[in-house]
Length: 409
Image 1: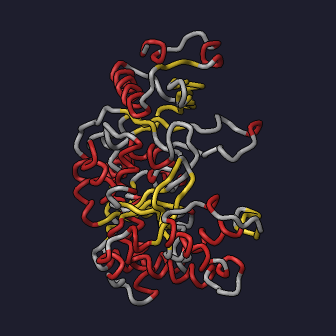
Image 2 (image 1 turned 135 degrees about the horizontal axis):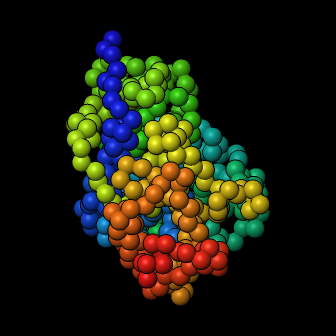
Image 3 (image 1 turned 90 degrees about the vertical axis):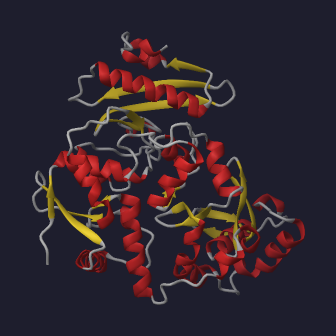
């Protein structure tokens, strides 16, 4: 068994960011740039809360300079390059990976596909209406009866649509805001994709594939348990540790140790070892980015704390009085450090972006280079939102000195 590859904490930060397309941020552009990033990570988490864009929009705006939300909808619902799926959680993944998730869909059918259950008893009606009338949302059905569902009591037709979606009978044709319109999966994905056989014939092969795939999405991965390993069938901590060790022994993964974190082992794709060598060079990528709350980079917040010494918690579901910062706060990245937190708000009618609050990290002393990078970042963010104006909250104005934010206007 080979010894771990030892690197410094700074090299670990830069390597992880490079894996995530964030060193430097917004170094790609257009649809080709978005595809380059998506091809690398294979999956990004979907969350519908839209304060300054949905989570996947925010993920892409920090990597793709001229990204607009319409581009993601085009990749999903026009090009069918991506598909609404379930990976770590509700996710958007590449269509070309559809057949690899057959084990997951089989598992969902065992849970949701029982014909006698009320959800599946309505399946012929739900599917028949789609066949006759085209894509449908839950409001297009007349049934008012309710049933228990994961989020609470819901209409049986909505539950039936969800169940059929989970087992792969239906896919998302398009969205109107956050409302999904479902269609038969054979109307959405190419026949060759649907006919492709899953190369992972056994559950064990699938589990190995999914662990390796997750390294793509994480970049530099810590083996300890956490939600960053969620969404896999039957892969608990002992099995995951075993699979990671086997993948390293087979040469698929590289074991990495960080000098300043003795005893901690991380895993990196073998093909990403070249990023370590680049990250060791004394070249600082002096650009800034606003990071999505559910960004792939933040899936493992314990690793973010370990490597960046930055503690982050998404407080959207916390009671207001218990929030330390705010409802939808974005970490601010500069170079290879998290330097601040931003609490934004956006009025979609007036197209006004409001900075509700801004908090510097304790050890940050912004210099000219950092301020210039933050101004470029904010300018790109305004363009991403198609914002017409920038304003500041009363909270910030009461502080008196807006610093670089005041200079931006």
